[in-house]
Every structure is written in structure tokens, then in C-alpha cells.
Amino acid sequence: MNNEFIKQETNVTGEGYLPGLAIDTVIFGFHDDKLKVLILSYKDTSLYALPGGFVHTEEDVNEAARRVLFSRTGLTNIFLDQFYVFGDKSRYDASSLKTIMKARGFTPPEDHWLLKRFVSVGYYALVDFTKAIPTPDSISDSCDWFSLDKLPPLMQDHRQIIDKALQTLQANLDHKLIGFNLLSDDFTMGDLQRLYETVLNKKLIRAAFQRKMLGLGILERIAKKWTGGAHKAPYLYRFIARD
Amino acid sequence: MNNEFIKQETNVTGEGYLPGLAIDTVIFGFHDDKLKVLILSYKDTSLYALPGGFVHTEEDVNEAARRVLFSRTGLTNIFLDQFYVFGDKSRYDASSLKTIMKARGFTPPEDHWLLKRFVSVGYYALVDFTKAIPTPDSISDSCDWFSLDKLPPLMQDHRQIIDKALQTLQANLDHKLIGFNLLSDDFTMGDLQRLYETVLNKKLIRAAFQRKMLGLGILERIAKKWTGGAHKAPYLYRFIARD
DNA sequence: AATTATTGTATCATTTTGTTACAATAATAA
DNA sequence: TTATTATTGTAACAAAATGATACAATAATT
Image (cartoon, rainbow over all chains, first blue to last red; front, side):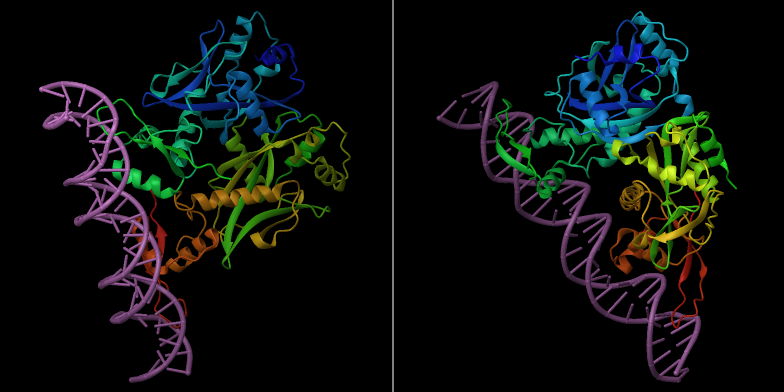
């Protein structure tokens, strides 16, 4: 359980943190043929936000991204891909952080480091919805999956950050051996196709998709899956682990 | 002519700048069938570096990138693409900046803001070698094109920044309507093919390349070019301007 | 006027992708 | 037990994209 925020808010000058630099993570999951995103809600504020945090002075930024994700959601061992830096002057809005701190019974001084302008580095990841059991940290009420088409109003520019992450995901779906964390270990060709269709938001041709995927040589066939449906049982596949 | 650096070094606390955040730009040009990169050399130090700088407190980061490029090289109206954030703790090396300031007759205090840890946002661009006449700013001896295969030793991690920029360029050459700034206004199909071959570092099939490029519908044929060679004159093409 | 080198394009082969079809088969219903 | 149903895996063919070769056109040179 994370109580780093308490350290951050009472530490008025931001000692031990890189000033003005934040991290925001966009964690995609896939369930019910919908893309989901992990969203935190801050206690007693009705503020929704991406899991984010700050960089320690003695830590790589990429390292910080992993730590922040773990401390805010409990998710670990996830490949995070850095996708953009959000650095517009207009993006930062001190009011939401003020609200969060006040809801916690802390009234920050006007020159509190968290109220200054921040530039945020965006990271995204794809995780297996069933295996990723997010748990909120001590300053959050909840840490939940939201469908992309049913997002609550988000703090600051987090909505734009998600949009940009989705664009990056769509552009990279083919190249990166994505789905690596996204589906459970074993899946059917139908599962994989529905994932692609959802991410790319378009129908794919079944026969061609299957031929293509098998042709890539990254799938191994495990066993048959008895689905309980009135039809031939599909094979189960898994990604071939690379050395 | 830029004398922002004088402001930066005498301003020991970094007032007016975002602390710990730098910008580095990788400007590619193409000449003699070679990819070139713009490199500055600092006066009296034999230190070579990418054109870089810092972000004003009242400015977007993307804006700052354009301003920095202009103030350090004189280049303007260039589309810069943000490609990565270099945030490893190990990357920053105060010694080179100390050397630069000392060579200018200024001995910075140990806690000078420029000697602290920096995270750098990388941008790259492609420019027409013949039109981009770089001019060094007041703290640089020179601002020159270097072949990618003949780079001098560079400050800090600038070499890795260039490598990463090149990878991004290679991955995006097809998608982005690149070459937009990279070749002169009018060019032959051969010019364009040599550019692609150099960036991708592989031979392309002439007939297929020509068919593909013409098929994209982004080229218009201007006129014939009398090259002086003992052969048929090639057509000149230019990119069709989009609305 | 013949020669040379390069360009633009046609032609055909090969590969990839789109489309349709069909046999295989697990569950269900008859 | 046997037909029915829905879905899967794959074959077969069509269409499109790409690779490879060839050749006519032609500006400069001989």
C-alpha cells in the first residue's frame, strides 16, 4: 500500500523529486469485446485520473514509471512504452491537486511544489484484464477499469493523454508483439481477432487473419478448448516465448 | 544571434526556466548520398553537441523546441517531431557544462542550476540540405553538417539520441510524408530513391519504387531536367501541397 | 549518325491479401 | 443414436501489391 503522496504533500518544496516532471500511465485491458482503461478516483473529491506520479531524484524516468504504476495500482512486471511528452503550458491546472489535498485535510501553501507547472511523460501498456487485479493506493477510493467509450470526466488533460495513447497503440499493434500481456496465457484465434478488431475499431477477415497470424510464427497451438458451444472446439494458442 | 546562454549562466538559480528539463534536436539533412546531422561546437572547448536548450516557464515544450532550434542554428519553419524522452539518471554529466562555462570565463557555483540533473526531450526533423544554412549562435564556434558515419565525439549521451532519432526516422519514413523539407522543392525520382535508400540503408528496386511513389498521388510532375548527362532527361517532381 | 547511360513504363512472375466455400466437429435436439 | 446447428480450420481461387526483367525514348557525346 502506497503512502508516498503523504510524503509528497507535506514535503512542500518537493525535496527528493525532480521538479515539474510527472508521469502518467495509460493501462489498457480487454474485456467483453471492449477496450478498458485503468482509472483511479481520489478520495472525497469525485476526481478521476490516470495512475500517475513523480520521479525521484535518484531514479531513471523509465524506472519511475514502473514504480509509479506499481505503487498506485499494485500492477507489476508490465512492459510500459513511453509514447509522448505532454508539455503545453495550458495543460496544468493546480485546482485539481488543491482539491485533492484539501479533501485530505491539508491546505497547501500557494507555492507548494505540486501546484506549479508540470510536464508529464506518458506511458502505456497492455495487460491481461483477468490477471491484472488493480488495488487502489491509500489516497484513492478506487482503481477500476472503465470502458473507453464510458470514461468519466477526467482531471486535467488526461482524456487527451488516453486518446494519444490509443493512437499509438493502434499504430503499433502489428509491429510490437502486442497482446503479449493483453490476453491470458492461452487464447483462441477468435479471442485474438476480437482484440485486434476492438483496438483497430474495424472488422477483419477471419480466414486472412488466421492465415496471417499463423504465418508470423509467433503462436504455438496448445490444445483444444471445449467451449460448451454447439460447434467444433477451437484450438488454444499461446505466444511462443522468445529466448 | 542568440545570447540566451549568457542569461542562463549568470542566472544561477535558473529563474524563468523549467528546472531539470532540456531539449535536444536532431536535424537530418541529405547530401552526397549521405545522411548528415547538424552539430554545434562550443567555443574553446572542442565539445560537440546537438542543438539544444531549455524551456521557458511561459512556453509550451513543443514551442520551446522550435525556438531553441532557431536560436541555436538560425533554422526556422521546420516541422519538429518529438520522439523520445531521455531520462536516465546516469545520462547527465555536469562536467561538460562546467567546461563550457569555464571556457567562457565564468566559474559556476556548485549548485548552479545547469549543473543539476536534466531530463531531455528529443525532437528530430528533416530539412533540405541546400536551403538550411545553419549559423552558429554566439556561444558556438560552428554549426555544421556531419555525416552520420563521421560524427565527432559528442557531449553526454548525444550519440544515443541521434541513434534513437535515426531509428524513428526509418520507422516513419513511409508513413509521414517525409522528404517534405528534406529535398529541395524540385527533385528527380532518382534523388528521392537515393534519399530513401540512404535513410533505410538498403537498395530499393527502381521500377517498383517509381510505381509506388507515383501511385501515392503526392507527387506532381513539373518539367524535364537537362542534367548534362548522356542520357534521357529525367522529370522533375515536387510534393503536391495539401490545402 | 552511331554510341552511351539513364529514365519511364510495360510485362510477367511472385507474393500477399481478399473472398468464398467446405469439411470437421462439439454440443444440442430429435 | 442420429440429425441439426454453429463455429473452426483450411483449401481454393481472385484480386492486389510487389519483385524482376526488358525495352523504347532520349540527351549528351563521339
